Image (cartoon, rainbow, N blue to C red; front, side, top):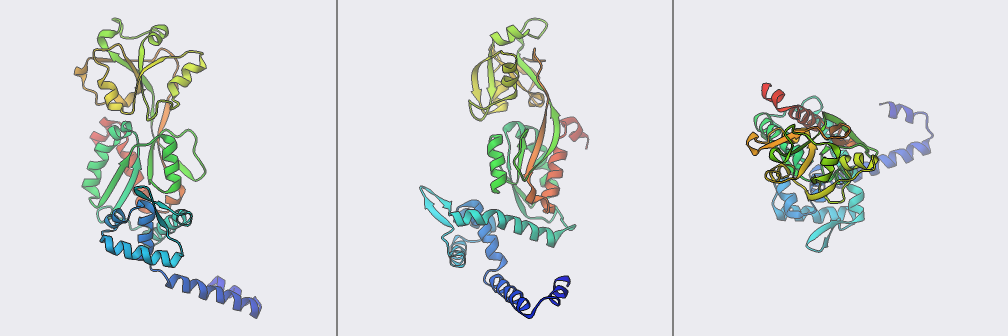
Length: 332
């Protein structure tokens, strides 16, 4: 209403131009309906006609027909063949984030304050290590099945750098990890505080169950990392003291990293909650690393454009609740 009152102060020429722009805008909106925009979003996110159809619960021919309409509307192929898959055109890349933000804003406008997890139908895309999966997923999946059976999850594994890029590109909805440095637009929230412990086969340790630094460095070590050259807090702390350890085994799986220790002289230094569900009969002993290692915050990260999405806000709160220590979750 305020906008229309302001028109009264403009010249007839300006009024004509503004009204002409409004008419053009309404004409543009009439060219494409919301269902096509939802299909466009699914196609750009999945980069695959069949997977987009599964996401939308539509047949492959229906999605192909919609893609043809969208190509005509935007005067661009949007998806092009590249090798065995499809790739976004530059125009499609430019459309993805604004479209996703617009749909999230519209969803927030329609459902603000009225989100009902029991009735919601939604899919969330998450990235995390198997450390986070080990801690969070069992409780999270049970909570969703109990409270929100229509909500699905797709979980992938990625490095922290890849997670941040995927959040910025709209490829995932939430990343779980350690994010000391984040790009503009990325929001982080601490799920819990963590610290490092060392663990080894009990029979390979002296009776006191610990090692001095020189003895600790003389032993071969296991490193859990998605890539062998990944920077990590442990080796950074050693380098600050001018020391270095020998990495005898690099693997990407937290759970497997404890299973390889029995009967060897290997030492593993990991976040303490990695060991929460390790069976006592594996014969392992945990001990404090023989040098100063700072603790760290384990976090969930998302893009700020999700802030207006009430479903996303609810989902983050559930992830937070499911990230508490096992004993606290069990008492809930």
